[in-house]
Image (cartoon, rainbow over all chains, first blue to last red; front, side, top):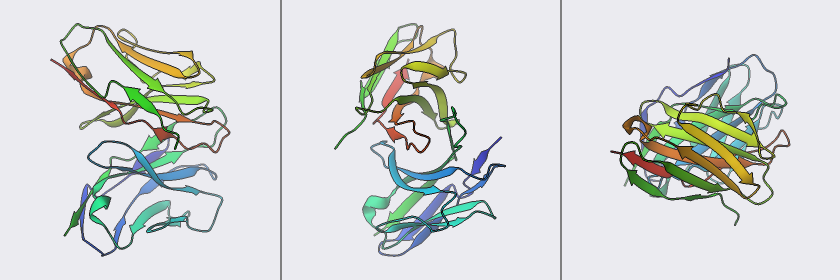
Length: 116
Length: 114
């Protein structure tokens, strides 16, 4: 069974600095999807970025980028030029492409604090 | 800007009462998911539907929980009777199940059972 591990329960970053959140996963599949979701205090789960395992190029979305290491089964999120609005819980998620299976497996989350 | 909507946003009820939570998926999406989030268990998948048919509800306590999709624009999650351990945030998410779908979440319903 697939598992997703976020080993950092909490991280802090100074405003305008860069921070990296870690995520590792375990799977025997070769093709899959990985996601980072942000949950601010408003509790809305917001998609930050998505990566297809068959793509070697790391996904980027403005200040957010990932470091996808397929062999190491690692999927870290880098936030550049951190802003106060980035403070939130961040969840890493894995999705199998297996036909008929639409489940996500979520990690336990990392709480990011942004210091002014 | 298409969004998943959920009602109510917050619900306080007494033990034993029936609770109904509603979700309107993004128009055109054909998969709907119900999650429960607690501090102890994190995000748990309760049930999901594709084209309004339930595909998996193994995460749901069958004796008190039920999930339905009366039509493509409405999904419901009912708890009867509610218990204090059901207190949690319940999220609905929708996606378009082509195999590449991303799940888009609603704002959640915070349920408190006294």
